[in-house]
Image 1 (cartoon, rainbow, N blue to C red):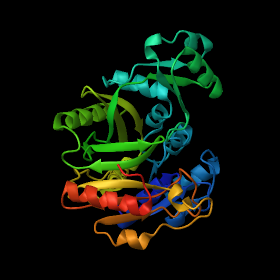
Image 2: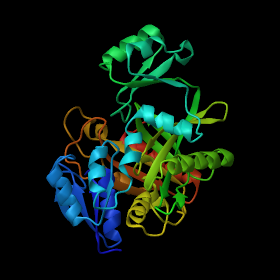
Image 3: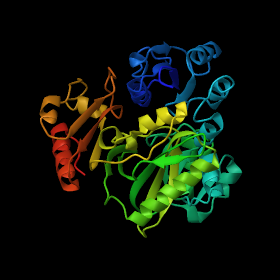
Image 4: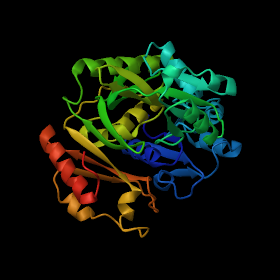
Length: 381
């Protein structure tokens, strides 16, 4: 119940927003992150400054926390397993381990009956040589530690595939066939220990250079049948892992109107940030409820919304000299909800914050989001 302490592995912006949601509900919070300036650590009641596999640090987090979650998928699964010996942990180590490995992730999707892109696992020269020609052209992705477009190489033919695998140091990879994409979307859901599932509205996403740039959410964002099918697939994927917590499942929408599952993230997701301002229950509220064992309620979206990612490039438009964007001009527009993550140093491609734009109608929200993008120097969409 509120008044207890909830712990989180990781001190980035997702941890920060989880901490804010937990504190709003009356919880104390604890963060484990080695960076003394981590965004979540700086706003939490307790900050355990150790590595993610440090036994003493893990024990310290467990001592002060009644239950523990994670804010990023690359936290070592063995650390979560150690914490779970003495405390409720959600999501569990097994589910996180699946999400950490693209090969295991793809196999899980197939087991759950979710359609994914034709693919092949490449771990040995023999598997490389046996790749079917039908999978090319494709995208070669490292099986582990890839995010925001990192660890991915487009390949056109067998020679390019071999060269790409060499460039990735011959680590285990997954080759995915290139498909005729029309759009991308995602489903953020929360699943309780009792199996109850609720979800946010389906989100339509635009990526640039492998990083989420814009999310739009409103009734007309996808055909209703497509949205319903995507939610059903995400629910099956979560149930197949016995998942507890907030899960994001990302999809590719194809030009023929069908979709395939791309990947999943065992945590709140960048594409769900709009829910803080456009829904009566945010993805971080759901994370708190699922972790604490509180009732889950179906979120209701009260305003059409566009979310713009604010990358460090906006601070570095004049070269390498860091300059703050003109927040006053931005906030003079109606419907602006600015979220900055407390990161001191701006770097190109680094997520520094996000902006959610809400309005009474979809047209008004889009127009104001485009105005905001123009003010900030973000490419229109």
